[in-house]
Length: 295
Image (cartoon, rainbow, N blue to C red; front, side, top):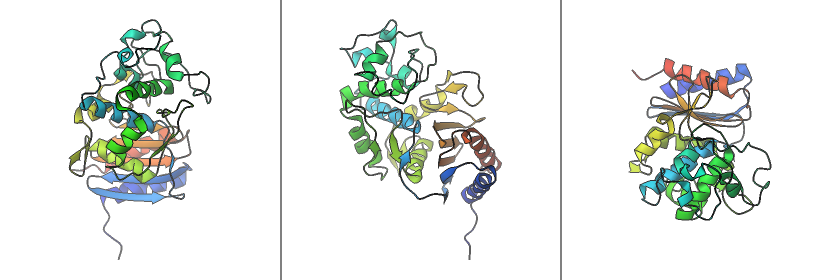
């Protein structure tokens, strides 16, 4: 006999139906609603690049290091990289500015970003800042993690020990730059369910199975300390790696449809290969979660 329908399974079934009628190219889906979980797969369960969802993981690394007293998110990043020549105005840029894309330093993304210069962090910090304005760049997260490595050592190893192993995620693999540092803004490979464990940890404000892994205040800053990011409804405000929206929700959003969508006690996790369809999927997911919110 079929098991009883839960809120998570109802949301899951609706999203599966949406994928099938819309043509959104999803690979895996995980729905957490309260204590209930429901999943679905369209493709084999393998690790895939979560793209900019990795920026959220980098925020967790910085928050954990700050909680240890090793670093302050609000100290000038120049104190962590004292041997780097800074561009005009960069002396006031902090780790928080780098993680919230509000450094005002411009360095557009390119496929060859990691190899265009002998040292991407030096190139980034050597450019001028336009002040506390939003300027999205993978180089910003990369530079933040380069700075963090000065106090925690290899950031990939730090995250494995402090975050991934407690979450039951073994040997999390990162792409690395020619100098051996994690790419940070992307290049982290996880299964859908592993990404969903991060979603549960974030929903529960840093607690995993009764154990605090990350300070609650740092988790909150991912979606409460928003900076203006533009005029597009889906991309008009940005926190520490988190985008505001759709509506009252917020999300970690990686290229090609890697999503962790947070609304109340629900988290919708999806891995996909459909950059153009991700915003519509996210909006539909939030609508279905709100229609099934806990009373």
